[in-house]
Length: 258
Image 1 (tube, helix red, strand yellow):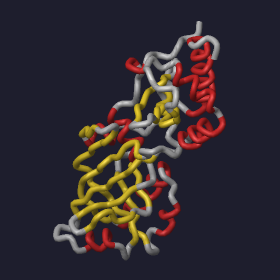
Image 2 (cartoon, one colour):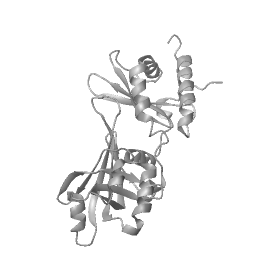
Image 3 (cartoon, rainbow, N blue to C red):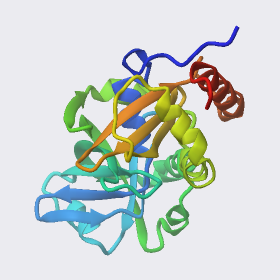
Image 4 (cartoon, rainbow, N blue to C red):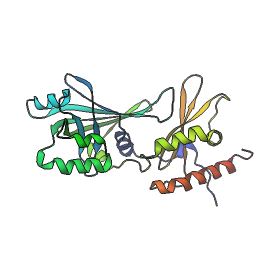
């Protein structure tokens, strides 16, 4: 027996802490501190063992401010922005603010920290640590997630205990492929969502996580977002193909004639 998609109002989704960790896994990040307004970051990561690490230019303003801070640490905020992987009128899906104190990673711990960093975010800038780049640690004090016009505080221990969505690494490519190669499937999913809309609404893929797809319905004025869930959550990328196939089959059965 094949399940039909759950109504959007009943759809499951990742917890707030999981969503914050997923947003924090995105590459677009900047540091703000006293006298520093959005300085570039060469790389950042929240490691599996709960460290928040940054790679910054050694001669940059962040590293300089840390070196000249009175107590050897710098109160700072790491802002990570999550952009949709397909062109949208409003491309920012979410942002996460990680606040705390920046300090250099002590030399005896640098290698282990770099390895932990590379395990979750193997950025090339790690190769430059000690040669034009510096590895910093953020002692986390506050986590705030902004999405869909709302702002939610996340307890740091909940954030560090959570994990990014298992599909975070392939989401962009999957949504780009769906957007370019499968417009009929997108329209089918939209038709099966119990929500009224105009005939000229444009359906775009907005997000993908282990619970299903998020769709952006771009209207003449504004937009609305809906969730189309899988019959069962997936736990790893190898299960995605079967989950999508089952979702499409269920959607066709729910919408005869499509």
